[in-house]
Image: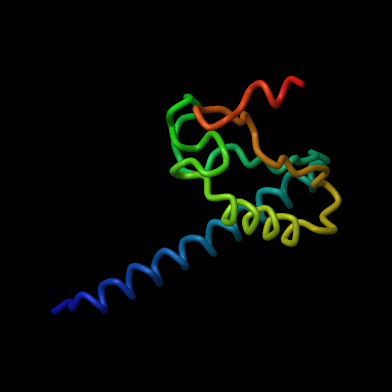
Length: 110
């Protein structure tokens, strides 16, 4: 019989296991690319997985529904640390295609 606390803990464990496995696979892909002399730029494109992009997908600008600036900084820090010293990683995109109703276009084009 599943109890709510056990189910929540099981789901949390499964989520963390999948995240760790995904990072191991990601590192292996980057390494394999390096073994074949392919340079890599790490790209932070969207926060919520899905097709990109619209002005109303919640991924476009700081503070949007799926774009928490604190989590974004944590993610950038982890990626930078993970790939520090990896010779075929030549860049890290801060965020691709900023957009949406919260952006202030006039500030960008001063």
